[in-house]
Amino acid sequence: MSKIEGCGCNEAASQNKIKMSTSGVSIMSSMDKMPPCGTETAGPTSAYEKPGYRLCSYVDRFIDTDAGPVPIIKPKLQTEDLFATFFVRCGIGRHSYTIAPGLYGIGNPDKNSEVLVTANFKLSFDHLRKELSNINAWILVLDTKGINVWCAAGKGTFSTNELVKRIKTSSLEKIVDHKRVIVPQLGATGVSARDVKKQSGFRVVYGPVRAKDIPAFLKNNNTADKTMRQVTFSLYERFILTPVEIQMVLKPALIFALALFIISGFGPGIFSFSGALERGLSAFFALLTGIISGAFVTPVLLPYIPSRHFALKGIISGSVFALLFLLLSASTIQGISGFIALFLFSVTISSYLAMNFTGTTPFTSPSGVEKEMKRFIPVQLASLVISFGLWIYSAF
Amino acid sequence: METLRYLDDVSTLALDQEKCLGCGLCTEVCPQAVFEMRGNKAHIVDFNACMECGACVNNCPSGAISVSPGVG
Image (cartoon, rainbow over all chains, first blue to last red; front, top):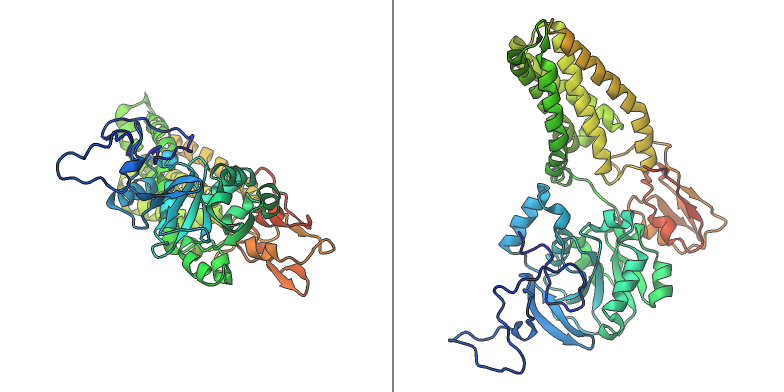
């Protein structure tokens, strides 16, 4: 994946960490107009090659503007983009999935074309360009440290300052004759239209929430209807987020599992390895059940599980799954106390992870989350302690 | 969002209608359709949908809107 990380994109303006690699780059200096070897003809980008830079696969060609050459990108995603998307959705390398900030173009942009602003998270960039197949526009990529527009706006990297800075460094006033930039609506959390205008002279027009509505937005004289302005959280949108939810709990879960095996070894003979293994395995599966319920089932079935409290949603789905698991493995668990211990444990994990999902959804308020946490963390902690106590007790 | 709702009566959103200039930018930037323009003033029509993202506060030209969540 090193091809994608920190690509230089032949952009002189990008001061970002550019992976310097001279391998595979044929250098053609302008003084040395030698005919190319063999029958190969020079591509449309060859004149823009630079030693140490490699062309990004999504760049189609370059065009010369009053502010220098600008890369024109392809609207069509390639196989490698789709593979990379898959990995990033699974949480692999998602923190370094970036493109160089600066100005790009798509189609045949000219002095009257609109300027669409986005983040330098490659997934955001891909989302945008794949919707622009028949559109001529400029794309101004802000440096959000590889974070998507909404999260970056909340964190303050997709900001008034960054937008003003990019408008200046890319000499936007030489690129277009008008004075407006289209900022994704969700960027409004970090951008003040009034301040951008004051500091750069450019007027901010808030575009739709979703990139797929941009063609309709542009056609409609830069106006968005009500549905374009509201966020959604459909089954697919929830499902696609779950791999990262699960990936994030893997490490703490591993530590938890280790603790479970140790605790499971306590018994009449102080510590037994066979007990640790046998009982530990039961506890491990209770943990797994809780993770599946809290980090996968609850997020996917979110609107169908009763209660508005995520922690309670996690308790409800966790109870169903814990009961199913315990009934299936009843023969291996001794006594009612062991049964209750594993039930409580599994439900607690589910409740905690479901509550954790509030940080991923597009409709939970920080004040609400705070209220929920104050109420449910003590309950979850108490339940965890009781379940551990009962689990040890059940071995005697 | 109509189908997915979070807790009621928790948001710290406040609108001072006296200060509202009627530009309507809050209705444009809010991702939850909390505001609506009635006459020349913005109105909060769905208080409990507010997720305290701060987009309205950031873009209100007269400082009529405030939201002050804690650390979250």
